[in-house]
Amino acid sequence: MAEIADDGGGGHGHKGGKKRAKKGSTRVDMTPLVDLAFLLLTFFVLTSTFSDPQVMALTYPAKPDPNKPQPPEAEINNAITFLLSEDKIYYYENEFHAKAEKGKPATTLEETDFSHNGIRKLLIEKNSLILDKLAPLEKKKNQGKINEKEMLEEVKKVKEKFAKKSLKVLIKTDDKATCKNFIDLIDELKICNIGVIAPVDIMKSEQELIKAKAK
Amino acid sequence: MPKIKIPKSSPSIDMTPMVDLAFLLVTFFMLTAEQRQPELVAIDTPYSIEKKEIPENYVIVEIDKNGRKFVNISSPELKKQVIGEMMNRYKFSLTEKQMEQFNKLSSVGCDIKVLPQFLSADEKQRNEIIKGGIPTDSLNNQLREWIKFSHNHGVAVGKTLYDNDFKDNKKNLDPANYELKFILKADNKALYLYAKDVIETFRDLELTNLNFVTSLQGKEE
Image (tube, rainbow over all chains, first blue to last red; front, side, top):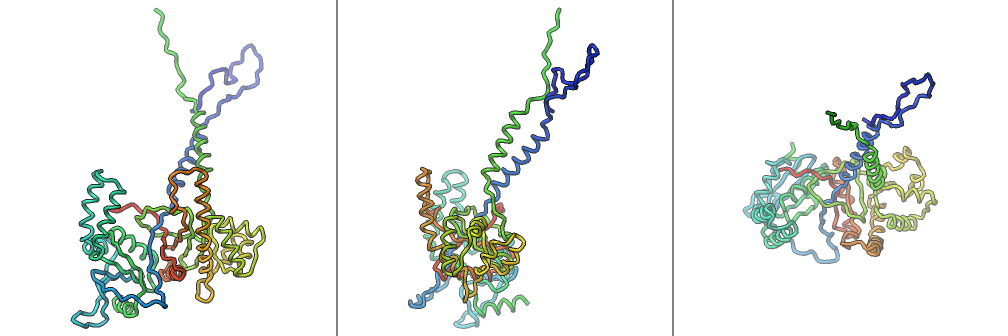
């Protein structure tokens, strides 16, 4: 596509029988060069923007100090415990009862999965108290009435107001759970705006329940 | 009547300025792109919707799918101080060349006793030397030492970084961005048990604000 030279480029005319040295065109076809340049350009543009990994913050409970008296265990209400094992995910609600006592039945595990109808549905249902309050805020933001910063502040206020009543989630993992499952679960919890997430140690009785369930 | 001649212009365009510009851009992106050091092991991180980007001043503990642990310290200044402390603690020293290699590598992960050997080795031999990564068992928890020393020096280094940027009159400085952050980078297939080892080590040192590296995933609707 480069310009064709029109000033005596080729060595075709033999005028007056004089022998002339063939003059080559001084212009070079630059198409491949441009192709290459843009290819490289595209490559660097794409790689420099997409390689940034993200981080997900998570606060773990501090280790209890053996020298200090243990705080009394708070009564768990409206909590859900997820148990991770291999690629499966189980859950039970509220407190754990190894045996039926005080009129409460023994805990049984329910199985769920990472699909939309699995864990997402469950969490939305359980956390409806908060999510119902947040829905109008989201709508306002989409309509452009408030900006992102204002929304985050409002979200924080709502969460604080209902801190006592809102859903708390405990995560327990057994020996076979993978990091992927763990992160996936945290991700789902964050999508559903769960305020309190606590990764805790698994109990032996729970491990046995998983074993029994997996059979 | 003489005909009006429309001067025929050549259909082709002079592409030189375009090529100039293209190459200028290529050069710019090539030079500004951060050269990432080749990683010791490949780690596939899980996806999440989280949009928070990796902070400037960090220590990453990498966990590969076999549960080997590696440490990656971002700031060269902190790296220098931590390795100094490690040399004191484990009674060994590095030659100048090994030191240079250490600064170049993004992550290190081997028993501290074989570190000098590891740094002198070429890439192929390195894979054999790293074997089990950094030991984390309770009798010989070297990871704990790495983290402890980085934590001890992290605040001072963060402050120096902040001061330097402040002197350069950079605007919108947020001191929080310069704090040392501890990040876990676990492979998709790694057992949570391995990560737990590391998390417990952090908790022992009263560091409970941790971060997980994830790749961005389009929000499903």
